[in-house]
Length: 372
Image (cartoon, rainbow, N blue to C red; front, side):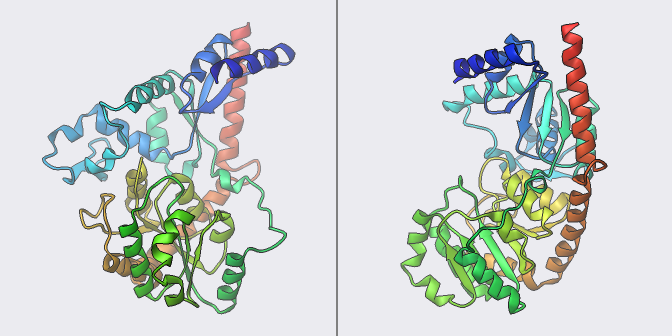
């Protein structure tokens, strides 16, 4: 892939000036390509700034070395209001003896030697962590999000059945829980059965998005018939933003991938966090403990560890989010944060637009200085 990219880049620089390169953090070799052409390289980061900032503090200060167990809470000394466990990082770091470790190291090295990061977040959401990162001589961070608010929303020519169902619930004055766990995490059939039972017994209205393969393990038990009238299962891709913007959606049971979490925040929907892989456990800490726009699903292992969740524990937290006092508090808070997100993306004077202007001015001037 690298030779093809460099061939295209060679043709591009011959016909017009190029000031900098933006590439995904997983494409570590693009730093080499940018360097060949004398271009600053920026990494596009699909995560927030909370995760890398807290992770850096934990690993540089070796805070996990003294933990007696994987679920012992450890205070992050640079941010003493934050507590983490070793479990929060077990899904972030690859197996040191596995084949992906070498690629992971290459990615970290290339990101560390790049000029900076373009982050899908906004200053008002996590100013402490953005300022902390940029105060040190590290690759700089520019927050230019939430990018979901920059994309035009296109109404489908024909409404899919789940949107028609939401229209009905909206007309009935019902509240609905949206349930989706992303496209990467594998959920066992045993866990899916527990989720189905928890949703069924919660008596909440819900829209549950499942991959077709996953749906087979629960639909054979007549689940859809049992929840008919108040719950539907969707076995195909959905436009998540189209669902979240519905006023009847009053909760999102989510894996806490950053894109999903940020979209939920932008549309003022509180999150019931259930992290599963990668940095999702740290995202959940941010959502629940830092910005307080969600609640946390309790697993049988530990409240902040991605683990097996029993149906009664899920039922309890669904009820709390949709009907309880804590649910009311996080619902109020997430609507406040949603307004901050809109302000950040306001034309010309929003913080994210101002940051983008600063980035372009700084990078274009830097390239000009290199030419001189």
